[in-house]
Length: 150
Image (cartoon, rainbow, N blue to C red; front, top):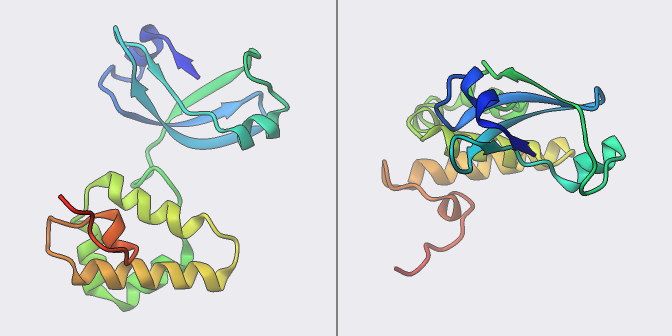
């Protein structure tokens, strides 16, 4: 979704900006304004969210934006919060990551419905994270995949 520069300025004008988006008064999600050009920005509106609003490509939608004041810009899964209570080293390593990498971990764990699968993903990511060189972590390695060749 295209966000005009005048709206971006109302949110401080410095991108990226984390926001809570409400579309057609029926779908709410956390997202980020990403830079386009000349101060304009965009917010990704996925096909599944389009389906939830019965919108089609090219339709006009009503969009409400509120500054996202949450710590990570996404919900912390309960399974990961419990793991961090038990694994202080894992929590410390997580806290040292860039916000975008923290959100990746949170979203990856949150992206499955099964509690067992969320626990499995949380322990995999945190376990692998603790084995990686500080400041050199990659998503691939956190997933247990081999490092890409340089």
